[in-house]
Amino acid sequence: MASLNKVFLMGNLTRTPELRYTPGGSAVCELGLAVNRRYLSNGQEQEETCFVDIVVWGKQAESCSRILEKGAPVLVEGRLHFEQWQERDSGAKRSRLRVVAERVQFLSRGQERSQGDSDGGYAPRGNAPRPQQYPQQNRYPQSAPRQSAPPQSYPEPRPRTPNSDQAPPMPEGAFEVENTEDDIPF
Image (cartoon, rainbow, N blue to C red; front, side, top):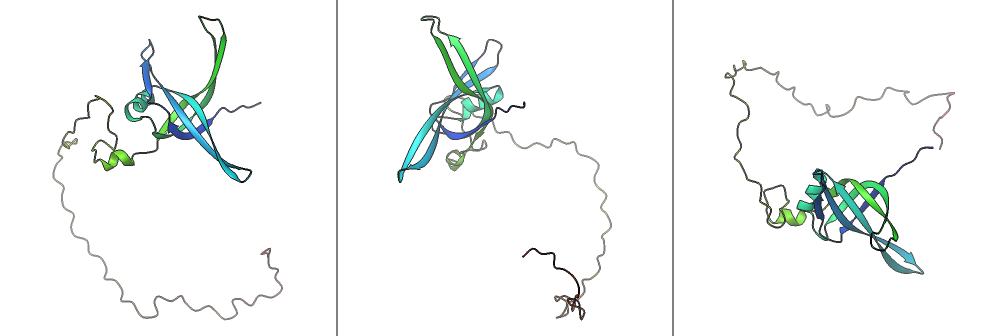
């Protein structure tokens, strides 16, 4: 039997992303996401919030840590991951269900862009250095000058007559059809 483990969540971050590195050097970032749901109950509008823990790996983890902050709206695509462990101190069994993000899409850039940043609308947080702006350079070597092609002559456009915008007349008897069935179901 086939199985599918795919999650799409859209909400706001509940805390600033926490970036750390594994002993092997892989970046891992942990996010908290609040997803709201509105519904009617007994004629009253109700709202419930679901809080989800999310883990992001690799370069996307570094991007999340650098760009996102508490309250930022994001769209997360990923999979569910169930973890179980035993506490060292008390020996109690613990478990949790998290989302392992395969893609995190940043939904809000309007605020940063309105400040006039030149780095694509994202400003680094904290003491992170801003990317340096370099002048445009010609990456391709200069080639031999082009030979100019002889000028082409184009035919003069035909003058329009008053009746040229109209369709040609329909032949007589074009819609007189006998002994045929209409295949249109209405």
